[in-house]
Image 1 (cartoon, one colour):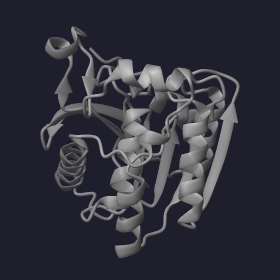
Image 2 (cartoon, helix red, strand yellow):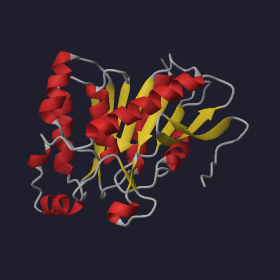
Image 3 (cartoon, rainbow, N blue to C red):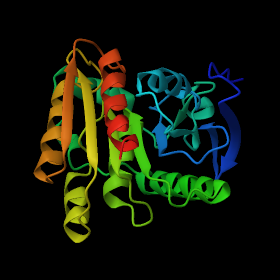
Image 4 (spheres, helix red, strand yellow):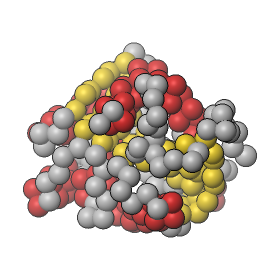
Length: 256
């Protein structure tokens, strides 16, 4: 069950399967949102994991008539049978033991060109979900912002760069890492695009060390994308500074 702290007179929450993803939509009541913000959770989290973040971001936005809607999809893979994790979901499978081993010695260069099996299917599922929601709500002209945490952040970067179906105007990357480097670079050369980026990473991150975030930042800068990068004192998490940075990016979009 999902609880919502928003004023029900001004906001509504809808749970529905768009495409094939069980999703939650939080939207301003009676108006077309100024942007649709899609937030993708990390590996092993429940599908509703990032719902509270919408409630934390909105109060940080400037007062006015323009507000975003938030689409929060659950990843397609259920980890209960494969990993013994009830309620946990994933966009693709990760060898956590191998990742922990590499992270322990901060030797994650091998990830840079790794194309995780299942990432193409995950991107397609996310595209289907977004397109179905926009069509259902008749929001086809609504600007799109993609974002996520950890594995969800990586999927958001992948979709922003490689998708031929959707074109986000902004990207939010919380504790992500550089993967698919050659594929992303090739896709960007074939189909250049421009979107604003906010990225944050914890310096004490023991799952995806901050070096992986710095590598991703450097890659995005090489693509000449406008990016604000922020590091915070903390582990693999979304810090207060991370929410404030995302809200600042959204405020720029809402004021246009």
